[in-house]
Amino acid sequence: MIVMKFGGTSCGSAEALKRVAHVVRRAQADPAAHEVVVVVSALSGVTDMLLGMAEAARTRSRSVDDMLAQLHERHATVCHALGLGAQCEALLEPLDVLREVLPGIWYLRELSPRSKDFVVTHGEVLSSRIVAAFLTAEGVRAHPVTGWDAGIVTDAQYGEAGILEETWTRIPQQLPLATGSVPVVTGFMGQTLAGERTTLGRGGSDYTAAILGRALGASEIQIWTDVNGILSSDPRLVQGTFTLPELTFEEAAELAYFGAKVIHPKTIEPAVHAGIPVRVLNTFEADHPGTVIVRGPRRTIRQVVGMACKKGQVILALDSSRMLAAEGFLARVFAVLERHRVSVDTISTSEVSVCMTVEPKYEPALRSATAELETIAHVEIRPGRAIICCVGQGMRERPGTAGKIFSAVHQADVNVEMISMGSSKINITFVVRDEDANTVMRELHARLIAIPPEPLPG
Ligand code: ADP
Ligand code: ASP
Ligand code: MG
Image (cartoon, rainbow, N blue to C red; front, side, top):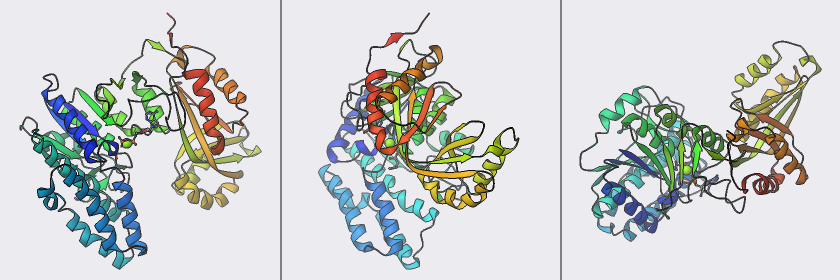
């Protein structure tokens, strides 16, 4: 059994959805694949549109009727272009719920995280209905299934919900295979035990695919997108990137976490747990082998195989001579951050200073934590920073990677504000100003990645 997930980039237009149908039909005809479970994202742009609509209803900045009409139009255009005109209104029936909910938000001028999740789930609910109807019309019998009907149960952390253990037993019960009809499951969502809809975080449809893959014992999880697999760097920032044919789970997780948007970081976890290979493929170039993410070491590698970049981050720098030989210093710092619910991404320390990075969404919380932190150390908050992450298993085997990286950064004449190396020893991460990030990325890609691979010693 394989799980095939199609992202928003594959579900943007009727043309793209025709490619999707082709890919699914081909997989189904392959005797090695046996069963296929499809996971879909919302049509491209629709998740942002729904979030904007909910917010605009709260602030009463746009007419609810206009927004609903626009959303209807976006989906109806695709239905008609796919030849589903006759079923269009039936397929778009879930819009009726939004016709009730959005005026409620408008009336109350209130949008809780729970209501926001409820609104935003409609993107995938609509796309799964359209995709299932189109597959059926193309001769591949299919039916839409919501994430909650498929058995995904989560905590109540709206916007970024975590999976509960019950999920693993519910999915095999609630998503029967071999029914002769392909389930088209909504990505990115589940429900709490109390039955409230939740979402799994932006880009979360990849995560849904991995959860289903693990629960159903898939032989492969396929992430279909609009590029030929995981590339050596972000193609929008660096020229001359190329497909990485094979990556280890650790390498892919590091790249994803530090901004390789092509795959959701959490995807990796259920797949690793079950040892299921994840393949990243291109809907628009279906014969390209893409990238396979596997366990264990690879044979022919470079020291650095890929790079990712996360801009707009915030540095928190703490300086204190009191830190010298004082036990409990870091514990006090983290206790303050925990009270203000600030989550730290990277950290580096010396005898008298600690430097960490946090996501921009925590900047207000950091500012309100400043007074407390100032009782412990001198505090500096520096927004507008980019984390650059160089990843490669080869770093573990061969010395000198850091030297090469920082001499390339030096060539680019850029100031590095913080450096850290993960305990897995397969990534070197450093922070520069946002405006310097592209130059550094290009320089590093040219010097360390776009070079012929060397076999491992021994
Ligand atoms: P989907 O809608 O299929 O989930 P995403 O937009 O989430 O697609 O991810 C695909 C995009 O990720 C690509 O179009 C590409 O521009 C971007 N991207 C960033 N870094 C990388 C990388 N290292 N490899 C491949 N794509 C990347
Ligand atoms: N539609 C959701 C988003 O845009 C989930 C996904 O596409 O994976 O974040
Ligand atoms: Mg994505």
